[in-house]
Image (cartoon, rainbow, N blue to C red; front, top):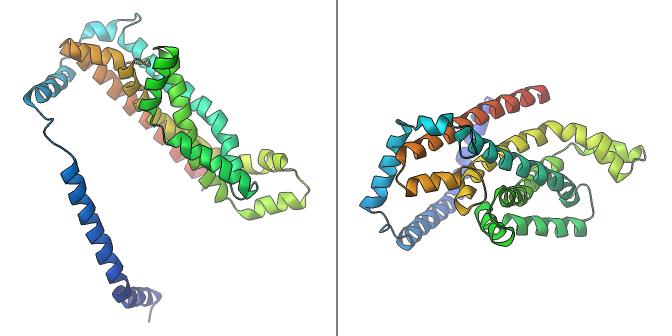
Length: 274
């Protein structure tokens, strides 16, 4: 009997014991789905909202060339660059704080009490959505790109820390043991042994977060935290559909281009690691 047949047979043998758990899980899902459907109201959809969405979509096929070719402060290129700058700076600042926090929170690097403190801090940071942070910073320091950068930075700390922790804890423990045997301090282990092993994974994580931050930076503009979002909302509110279409088209192109290069870099890094 082949190993494949043995594997299939073992799974069939396990099925009777797994079936009750499967039924319980399925029933729980159905009950939760019904409860959420009852809770959510779908009465907010009206003809006016649908008409706005249709007109904004039509604007994509009739974009304002004036907005596209304008090189001034409220031109498309300037607004897109500000959005990208907010996302990039927020990601970089978040990374600066996320790396040490991730090492302190890793169970294979520091004592448990330090891990618990740092993990609690990361959970608190992750509890605040970027949109809420944007509102808080706009109210406290005023509208503008700086509020957007701070929102992106704090939002990035939580996610980057969590993902980097997983990478650190998945490392081969033999690396740390060999460095311990060589008499390296904790800092030396991180600097000379772990960072070189983690660099490609960290770059991939940062690129993934940058993709998210570009989208978030667009949304943050709605609350006056810089970027193209505010001008987009003004254009929609004033029924300037061609202007709104040009801005939406710019956001789509920027997102697609960034995603393309990000995927290329991550694929190359994965190939080098393999």
